[in-house]
Image (tube, rainbow, N blue to C red; front, top):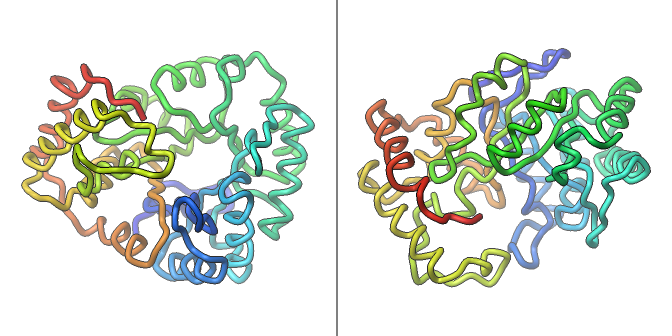
Amino acid sequence: MEYRYHFQDQKAVSVIGFGGWQLGNNNVWQGTSFEEGIKLVQEAIQNGVTFFDTAPNYADGNSEKILGEAIKPFREKVIINTKVGHGPNGEWAFSKEGIEASVKRSLAQLQTDYLDSVILHNPEQYILEGKSDLPEVLKQLKSSGKIHKWGVSIDSLEDLDMVLSHLDVDVIEIMFNIIHQSPKIRFAQIKERGILLIIKVPYDSGWLTGKYNATSEFIDIRSRWSDTTKKTRAGIVAKIKDILDTENIAPYALQFILSFPEVSTVIPGTKSRRHLHDNIQSLNVSLTKKQKSDLEILYEKEIKQKETPW
């Protein structure tokens, strides 16, 4: 395992993190059961994974509860990044009271007396522009020792520019992958400010595993994609496979992200032992300079001009 970023307490952030969306989410997403989730998290730790991403609305709280039970013997070795703003059962908590209640609940569910990182979960634009008291609320929680770092989870370059202009954050979690490359032009600035950079949605909701095509059918949240969107994505993925000369593009999708040294960690969703070990084994795959360059050229010349809604 590789580690690029260290907390002040010397905890090392593994470049391959653990996305906890599927933990306990065994209805729509066919994720793990409670017991399976505990075993999976502990197996990840035993294989060098130290960074775990979760949220109070993931599996209506079960993701945090599984993590809390699993990490008890390893608490001082692992980093927990959880969120505030969205809670179980559609709870909306972008307020001082909501954040304080959410942090209190997360501390209980994770069975810990501090949270390594807490981030605003896709907040509205006015919050990203610094027009709320929420940053001060999080700074106060940081001063109290209940949280060690705070930041935001966002989706776009536009969001990122607002954050860098208006908020003094410790952590940025952002969507970035072969199909969505625009945030990379701010990576150097993020590094200069010492911000922990977390990359979410590395597989573009599964497309960059290479297993979907224009006729794929979805019954979960991905059913939002139109036939036109699926056709566009399938065409892009075919060209990526040509550049990489393989059908199995998943490890290269992670390597592309990690080829940017400013990236602290990437958090692919992890719902099985196979996913866990495939993610870790991606570190043994080599992405050549030419392949990376060709993927960037593909983005600039073709992908950037296409409609690729997430």
